[in-house]
Image 1 (tube, rainbow, N blue to C red):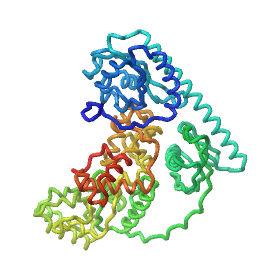
Image 2: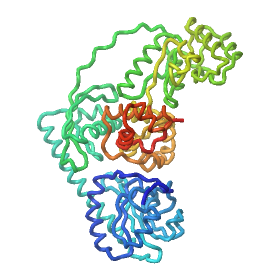
Image 3: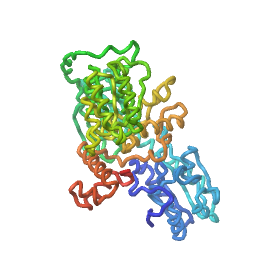
Image 4: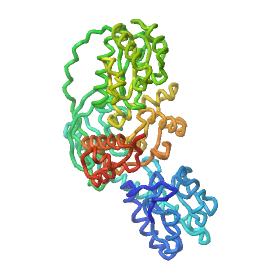
Length: 553
């Protein structure tokens, strides 16, 4: 069976939670032995409703299940498959029976099933689903008790695994404290223990950032040392060491030491007027190197009032940054914006007639100026530069391919906003800012770890606009509570395989994405641009998780 013509979504080699598999395997083995001669099959699905294991079942039943795509790798979330024993049990968070035509998919009408969610006793998150399925004529009232019994056994094993891991983690934490370290953090997926020194520095955003850091660096190593920056700008050096075996769920001890404070920057001459009282400063959310570089560039260009070009991909927040800069220049009234793609020579002439050292405006999509307005737009920008007018333009590129449209180069100062995929470590801070804007009169919602991991594994072709849309949907589904994995739209719930990309792999991934975008998804042409064989490109696409991405226009 292949997924090529499947109406359902399919993931080749679907990632699974190692802790869930470890807890479930002996229970499923025992249940499969008990039901070896019964006309049923046992399914285990992950927390995003992807089938990851299928046990037992007579040949005729397995053939029918294959034809209905009830097999490992297929996703049975309600958004994909409608009412079914896996997806509906996940949504309802309780045992659920589905029989015959109660299934939405016609291929499932000959089947009956009972599914129940597995709830982690420590985190209280749904970590998987157990389902027993049979042909509709073989329904037995014992199916539900068997499923519930299996789920209870798996949950007990999850608790025992968590308890043993937490005990080991606590023991190592106490040893580090006894050695005299004042700043120690013990961390697992569900637990954070910190000395008072660290607790005063660390908020929930920092906790997720640290978890991402150790998930990256301890994925294949037992120890790692390197720098970290907390949300308040405090720099520390961290020595992290893994607790337990490499096959155990990740937990670690971190010992923190402060880094010497950098020398204060030399004061710059501030030629721009002071921002009005109460104005929000132009602060770039995030703590990545890209975010710090962007912040430095924004500080530099806002020191003097003069035209600026803001460059970046669609959705990165060019207009938002333009308004922030205008605000920093003292323009607290709404600044008019103009879509350059609609400009005509007469409209440009009107703008030029109004141009003065105090006339502020935002010209969006400067790289889309119509042919007949190119010359007049160039003259407008030259005059704005000469007058030092607070004019800000936005574009996707500062150097267009078509030399006839060299409009952007008439703005001498520019700032480039990197795409979200190049500053993915800023996602937590960006999400907090977007959620605060979405719900301004309520406490800011937090991303729970599983939701956060799923989001940072996404490629974000739509950048911040796409992230804002996803968070808006998730916030509505969470009904005011912190955002969990199940609150995200279905396409954003897939968790990565557990290994985070290195900096080199991220750079390689970006080069491949750019080549595929420029080639409109043509892999042969992209391979030629990259100077590699097609087979190498196909292998890299699979290894870097790009199989399901869409490229080009």
